[in-house]
Length: 451
View (tube, rainbow, N blue to C red):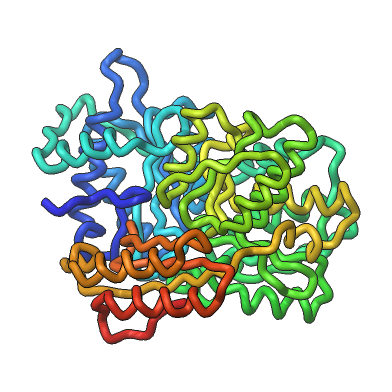
């Protein structure tokens, strides 16, 4: 069987391997068998989803597989991914599952898994689950089957939890906020939470129809939200992705700030308050050199990991750190959450605006980034372009050109058939030349490239 798990669970185009109803039922049976306790106690799993049409099919398939192994299923409905991590632990579940393809288009879907501690599964656990899927799982006898029921208050539980991460007396009264929910999982929770905190809320991307998640909206396409910020005279924009585990902040002029800027702001603030454990921020190999230079100037440390927020979290837990994230907008604050939470990070940015009486345009530009270019190159499924001698030679040539003036990352996406090329260098001519060498060496499908 082909490898199922990527950098964040299982993901693919709906009704194509591995995201078929049959395969998802098998996955449900395998994880149910793996996580079911053998002590005779209650066996339960919580399942959340985003707003994709295929979510109904996969929710039913997972429920069938899980109940066949004796697991009781609690269906949360559409909720952000971080809510599943929270509810897994708070409801004493053996397992948490989020049905979502995050920032991917509506035709894709995926499954993210959380252990009983609310954290995402390790590579070793995923390998063991894959072996179970491959070998097959015998169902329980009829009197040992599980039950399923819906939980109606999941988003309210989540809302109260993330509001509690802010100072008790903090209010957003007088702050005009554009919230773009990408027609996704937070389309109800995010506007409600902002309004309850006192903000004047302007909604974008809050009318999901099963097919429009992440379509011309959200953290991957901020144009509509930026135009709304400007036309409405808003103070700030908060743009989430389809499952609300990542965020992009917009200033009052509509300019976007990525996760690196937000991490820099939070790390500096927490360090001044003595809250940044070991004076260390954890980020991935994709974070900008400018972030690293900024932290060094403040006598703070940056630890880098492989791409994927679960690798960030694993390093945070191993090193005893409490702040980390990704340039893409996953911000992980383990004092409050077990995974990246876009809305929570956005709320902490708003809190800093209120606390310092400072505009978003100032707070969202903490450091000057080193010029960086990222290009995504789509390749034919089944190919292994990074194994070719031409690509290896191009990488060596580009590294020699950059020397100690910059750096590059060439990697295969864990969620799509893409090669991601990142080059950064203070000399823009060297940056462009090295990028060209790399891109030309990678065979691609004849489709437009996404910068």
